[in-house]
Image (cartoon, rainbow, N blue to C red; front, side):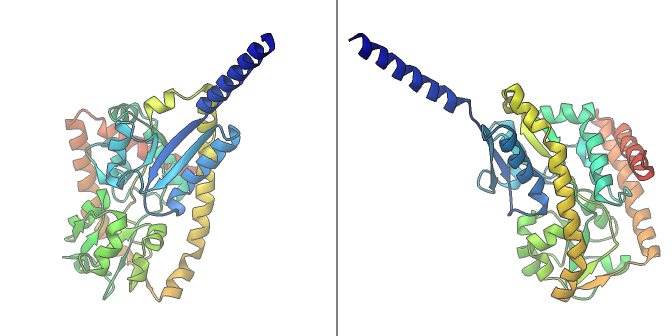
Length: 340
């Protein structure tokens, strides 16, 4: 009788332990879009590293469009619909005003390492932290992308006069830059860009190289601008603040300590893609267009200064330190270029 009593107690204890162990495992849902590509490799690597460091006790399920539309990822984070998400600032500029400084045209960023440096500096600024907190979001890492360039159909557009009336898929500051020289920007999402190009809604699309490949716009293209480099978009990866704060110390350490390694993996992977780009153009019969230096200078003078000055004034009017943020980008970029 006593033995039975003891055994049943042991069984209950074992069962309780099993439930506690199960409850201790942490599972996060991560909302991204499209398909796995260079743009999401740091998210995939982060999930892999976190799982390794916690012996599978902290896992991330990366969902490509199954949790939310890409324009609604920040809203999903704000209500706790999922724990982590990637989004691009240009999808809802009013919700993430601070990081749009990184989307200003012609900032002079030359490579992915410099893009990463300026993004990290802005993300660490108190204004960025405060604005994201309004959405219950914490900026975790950026998704550094090269300067955007155009693919287009028909005759290659090589002068500013050629841009007049051009229907271009471009968001954020890049869209504003093209508008400044007479083009007509539309901000369809990346997932919709191929269809817009195929159906003739747009005749050009501004993307980084990986997206031209991933979303198929390169397959519709007759030409690609190799050196227009009007700017890029900024796409943060954020986590829900409540979810982040509810992690154990060990889980939080596993997450935080994996960010730089995940970004290193991203940069190495993207570097390989860039090396293959010329071969991709040749294989698909896409003309590589070099824009003349005087055309680039004219584009910058019409787009860069007026858009920057307007951005700073708009931010200052809303109580955001626009000048300070722009100066931070300029200084960080200069430091990155000088190696200091």
